[in-house]
Length: 269
Image (tube, rainbow, N blue to C red):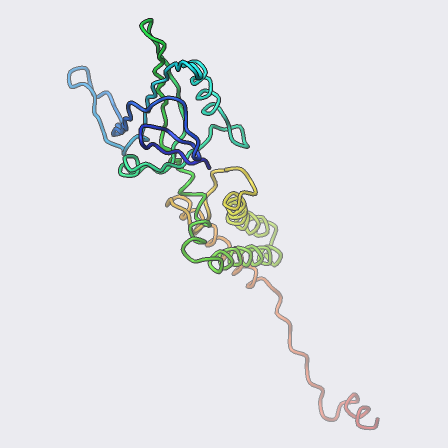
């Protein structure tokens, strides 16, 4: 992830100066409302639902130097840098190192727009770059494994992975010992409801797969996922109980009588 900094009137990306002088930096954030039309006389009902992603605008003055590149060359350089993509052909995400933005709680930005304007009075172009805060909801759901690794080191991640492997193993054993085919399908389905999202979530957190948006069962943010996982575990325990109740009980092997022929033959041998 590239490092984007604003300091001393310059914008730098990984230590490389962008053309032009920084003349303006604005940070805008607004409340998100749910607007509902009540009736014609009272207007709309506005219900606050949180905050929009922060928008950042940085304006550069691109001038033409006598013995250097002109303003159009500088604009072309900026356009190539910020229209670049990552390995998955998505807009690049930039890590921020600026006290103004850090004070507003912004640590990552995505380039979302580039506008330029010039006049006939001089050879100067005002280029305004627009950035949007990178704060997707999938970060809360797909980074639970990474968060546990940060807080509990490698041992915590190994314990989480082993727990899910054990849960999948026990779910398959319950399915194999179910009393009927409906129990088999129920047990397999409940096992996959927990096992597949756990696999994809860990693969995304370790950069083996692209982002899928699947939560980590029992760990990720969200009450609906937790409710579904608990329901699946309850059904799985019910199938296991019915399988044990329907399992045939092996009768104990009868002991031979002291005077039976088998005992007498064994004694003669």
